[in-house]
Length: 219
Image (cartoon, rainbow, N blue to C red; front, top):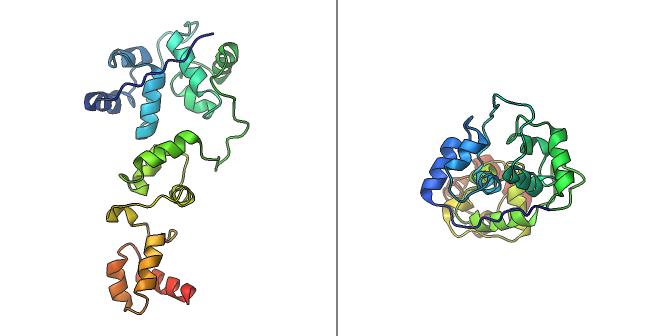
């Protein structure tokens, strides 16, 4: 049985630049790999997923009978059952979902296939690790780009479950209409008797109506 490659070397700024430039293009997988010495398709896919970059479509002239490469097989094994089949097919537009499934079953997927891909699947250890890595440096809007299957509220809720509190003030701000953070509630309670206009200065992401509504809720 083939082994899934595990490339762990740190990404350089030049590699990230090349990934952003060529990954969304229609360049073939073979030509794409030539631009990244020591990287394989799985490595590129993981990094692209973190950056929220989608693979460009590519249809080779010869669409029939092309032999699967070892790198392609390794990629199918790594991702099959962990993401939707059509996500994998983006890498192999000349392959059918049935062909991808046959390769996965023949060589054995790396992990057990998930039974259901729901709209709100449970958070994986990989997602939690990714959230822990970036929650102090990225806004929730930015986080939604590296968690394409997660909503704004879903990410905020997971941060609350994991008890993740941010240090930077601009990261504590939230969209109007979304859940109030613990920090916002603390500020409101400590300054409850101040005029709404002053509270808006302390809570710049909240409208006057939102503040009045929350005050009524807290009374």
